[in-house]
Length: 217
Image (cartoon, rainbow, N blue to C red; front, side, top):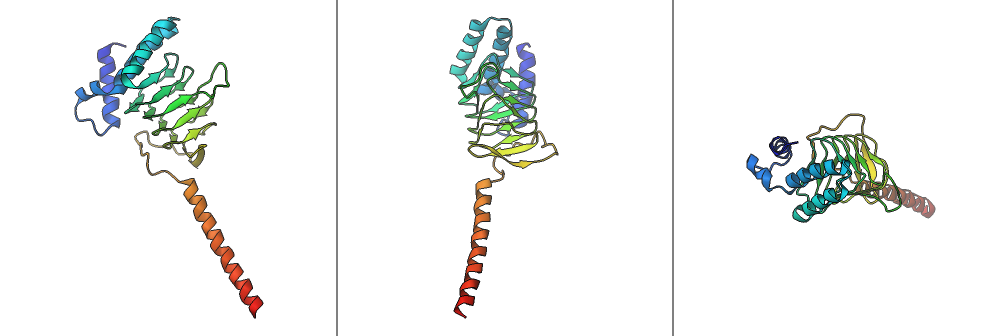
């Protein structure tokens, strides 16, 4: 892909997903713009078996942008990294179309696997700030991974995952709209569990009061 074609396509993606941008020229200042551009070049070299040259390009890009994308990773169209500092994408990662990552995200391995060691991220997934997805499994299409989550196992399509370790707190057969990038209004399973325990505690207290009253009579 030539630079002008890449600039046109990537600027449209960035302007669509980042409300802070005011002019098309601003995309030239975005770390993700250059990190993804250099990845595309390095990936072509990697596929040709020119591993040293590919890694040289990717490591230079990592030093300049704070975004480390291994040239062996496979990334679809419409990819966007917001802010981006601290993002790490491992060699055997597979990313589908229209995926959004935020700063501090790691798509890594556990250190135990050989061969396919990193996750597969299907289409239209959003992975929020600081989330870690570790291992060779699939994050289903149209899913959301909440900020700071650590995901260690398969996630079905159309799911919302939060927590450490990450667990599915919302799942649906209905696709999440691709433009829905809300990172804040996600279910809180710990809060829900505490609320349920509080209700059970109050119910037990009422039964205890009734038993004490009967005993006194």
